[in-house]
Image 1 (cartoon, helix red, strand yellow):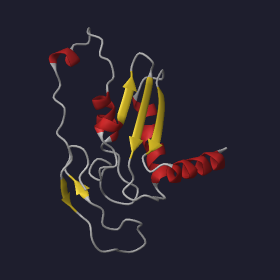
Image 2: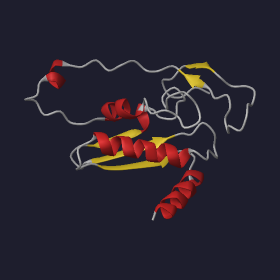
Image 3: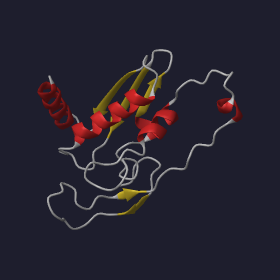
Amino acid sequence: MVGLGSEMVGGGGASVGLLENANPLIYQRSGERPVTAGEEDEEVPDSIDAREIFDLIRSINDPEHPLTLEELNVVEQVRVQVSDPESTVAVAFTPTIPHCSMATLIGLSIKVKLLRSLPQRFKVSWSCAWGWTCTLHRERMLQSMQ
């Protein structure tokens, strides 16, 4: 089970301790994006795109493992949608297991990272590919924060 453009490099197997996914599959990191001359030129307007957003969130650490969200294939560039003219960013992510109790924490980590990194004009949203479980956890957490 390999994600879009990702290569699986390890993991799977026995259960250890109280972790929900004690031995997750580990994927190879994608390469760094080369910086073009146009991007270095401060006089040229540089719109924010999906790759730039992915570069911001790919290195967020997973709450359960000493791995990044990219290495666990939780975030992928193809699931990032950006509209620079409308100032919106939407990130869909896939937890390593269907009923991940950490999904809300991952979503909020993505949102906080982007809110701290992007211009204030951007509205950031996130969603969970597994559907209702993530939504239910998000609603409970947001209600408890009020």
